[in-house]
Length: 134
Ligand code: ZN
Image 1 (cartoon, helix red, strand yellow):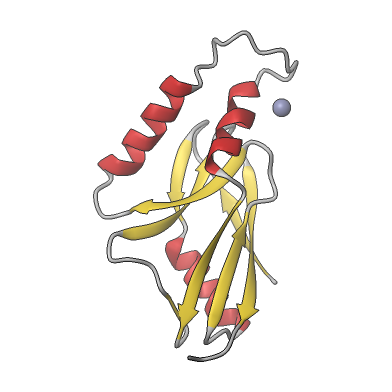
Image 2: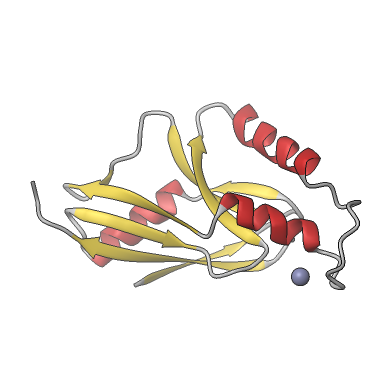
């Protein structure tokens, strides 16, 4: 298993980690199979979406902020309940097929680390899942 270390820069941020995931797949020596990308945090997540137009990740974060405002009557005493909810909405993992050593993402797709309670030091785990080459 490969670990990607991140330092996020804002409370809420989508960080394009596509190349970091590709690097982890290469380090793992995976040619055919899948990469399980897992975020072991409760106030951050991972998602796949467009990384061509930077307006798309901005719009995703804007919409999440409106769906789950910090002003809801939360009871979690840490003051970051919105971040926990947003992390659950994004999810903790994505799985990307790998063929001939390359992530099989669509033309406009990228893998994003979703920070909801930064800035913090974060980790992303990449587990190479070997499969048959066909
Ligand atoms: Zn909390």
